[in-house]
Image (cartoon, rainbow, N blue to C red; front, top):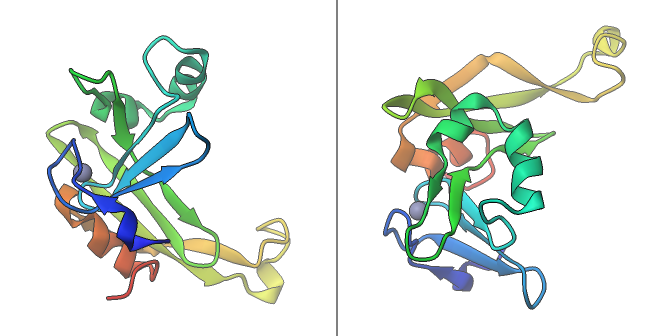
Length: 147
Ligand SMILES: [Zn+2]
């Protein structure tokens, strides 16, 4: 990751928005300030949007916002790194949610069958909750960002 690419987030105003150009026409923005992401291909009504929308958890649909001027769609990020853990939006409504972070632990030899040969699994007993603006702390908790 190249942090020189960080810019002002048009959603939350923090200066920790990472923009990645995938191709000339496609770019992805991921804000480390608020944990939300947008994708230039994802505009309301597009096939891509409809496909993604269908498989989203209910809370993600509720938290999704369309930027008025640009039509840009912002939605919460899910981070899932097998060896380290997961960070995801967790809650019931726009007013009542948080980032939940869970750490991964190695699967013991005698559990290999239960976890279908995976060498890591998330350990739900490690779950910690973080406020929306503390997304980076949640990433640090699972070791994706330095503390
Ligand atoms: Zn932001």
